Image (tube, rainbow, N blue to C red; front, side, top):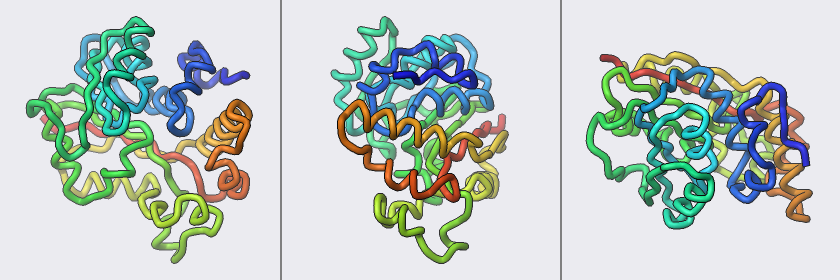
Length: 244
């Protein structure tokens, strides 16, 4: 199976079978590589990979940018993640952590990234203040999160093909402009980029098709994406910097 893309040269170096073994949602490295274009990741930086899943993004961060990664996830056993890191030959600290009870010192990280997980906890009004307390002054925050091209509040309903698959949880899928305002109004960070991923729907659909083929059964999101045809569904890529 071919998961190489000219627009994702770093991601294309990674084995497709390995990535599918790490499957917990849309192609994590495509999302991270695109997001990282709006970040300034330098070797030696301390980076929190929040909601790191089975570890593909932590491996990528370590190998591609030379940063020191702490991989925090609630659902994946850190022993399993640590075994992945050992097989990939990277030194990553794996731990089990809930997003509202992070076991780190204040101002410990140079950057925090969150790929396809922030929608589960980050829409709460008070969460940004909590999370940025772990960033050094000048530290960076970057998220890639499922997004809508229009706010559900403005539409007045959840489109049926989306509601059928994710139900009410789609209310946490926002536009890039929503995220920009949600962060900027706090004055806790300076938003450096907030954009809808141009290839978001297509990339998501490709992953769902490949995953379905490999597993011999439809990916849960495949029908939703085929019905959507890029009308509403994509990803928002949002980055910010803590003042100081």
